[in-house]
Length: 363
Ligand code: GDP
Image (cartoon, rainbow, N blue to C red; front, side):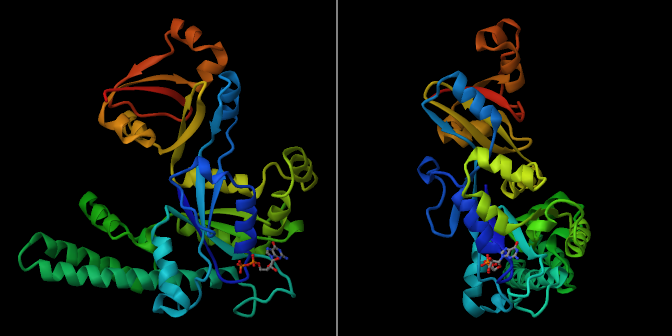
């Protein structure tokens, strides 16, 4: 999973990104992740992984991971190609979801690019760039399909449909709020890979003393807006996160307690992205390695196996599954087998969060 961090200059993006990467993971364990100074890998805290690793004395422990990409430089005019803007927009096209950092703190010493703190205006500024870029994508696609429709009549519908989406964007609205009731149309829309269809999490960056207790007015405004566009909000203090990222686990706990908080902003961000993207984890465990794998809710066993290796998917025979809860309750695989709790599941099985799985496959 890859999340892109965007926001106007001086809202706290780098501060947040640095705290994420400092808390981050050894990238050697995640060969699929890009090695790039703008990319940080963060592991997903999961007590189940720790429990299994201890139980099986695993040599290697690999929690699920999220890749964060710092997409700085998205400024007014980016969609017109100003300030390397197009490249930043291309980076956003590759992420699964957008973390949009909005300044919700007052601080006279830190200049706001537009002169005053106003989260809704900031959101609009960024949205405008994304919408503008999407309109360009649609223009190109519509032109191509219009040409193609001379030979292929089915493309005429695509042109008509995408023109409606374009009109919606030209109204200043996001592609994700365009209502589609036809499955084929939805597929056409998805294939355009628009920026404004991507799930969004707003990181409302507040001052330290505003973290616990009631939301300030800026945050309230962000929440109201987010509800309209089906986005999530989490309140964070980037500065505090940076301090937290330098502490060890015990110190961190104490520090959070002093602030009246249960989890760090990073933990909140991870759970917000999991729920927003409909993600779950399944587990594999043994002496060599205990590992959590991230999949979309609804993924079937062969595709889950494919996350581990494409051969596992191709040669899939069955999945031997026990739930983490059952294993924890009865203590050993053997005990679970005797209770009939280790199931043989076939290729239609929908994997559940916390399933511990051994895949059987032909090579
Ligand atoms: P970016 O341009 O969005 O990457 O912003 P930076 O992370 O560089 O932050 C800009 C300035 O705001 C820096 O001086 C930060 O120390 C400061 N800053 C970041 N987060 C907070 C915060 O939560 N409260 C206050 N008061 N300042 C912050």
